[in-house]
Each structure stands twice: as structure tokens, then as C-alpha cells.
Image 1 (cartoon, rainbow, N blue to C red):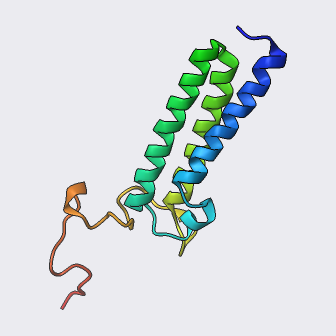
Image 2 (image 1 turned 90 degrees about the horizontal axis):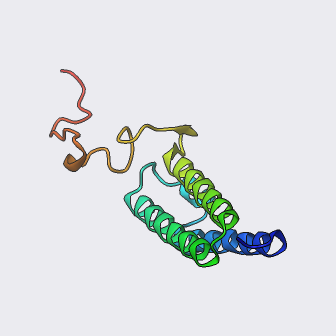
Length: 125
């Protein structure tokens, strides 16, 4: 286990690396909020960033054998993942969170169990 005067700067540097991974993989939170909720490209990029950041945090904390690095880095991964999940779930027209599959970019795709018909949106006669 590292001394606190060594462990804390390494933990801060690890959190900065995690932030950099999210910055290079995803658009800004403001840009994500103005897209349709559940955008497949944004979700895919978020998952990639999360796994990559988690691997970096695990690697650095295992090399240093220090739990402080893992706790700070892991907290940063969780925080950034939740921030981007929330931004991707908000409908820009209503500024409300939309449940997955309801009004999202992927809602009408048969692969998610949604029914697609020729009379979608048709009014009763």
C-alpha cells in the first residue's frame, strides 16, 4: 500500500485519465441531450468508454497495489457513466427522461420487441 502523499496524486491522475477517455469517446453532455433518447451510437460509445476506463483503473490500481486509486478511479467511472446515461435518456422536446424503448431512436426496431405495422400512427376511421 502506498503512502497517502503518493497515493492521492496517483488517484487524481487516474481520475483525470478516466475523464480523458470519456472526452475522446463521447460527444459532450450538452450535445447528447439534444439528440433523440437512446441513440445507438452514443450508447455503444458510452459502453466502450466505460469498459476501457474500468480496465485502465483496474490496471493502475493493481500495479500500484493501492485501494485508494481503485476507489477514486472507480467512482469517476461510475459518475461519468451515470452522467452520460442520464443525458442520453432525456427527450430534448420535453426535457424529461424517457423509459428505454419509449419514444427512443430504437423504439420502432423489431429487434427490441416493438411491433411495427403499416398503420402506425393512423387515426381511427
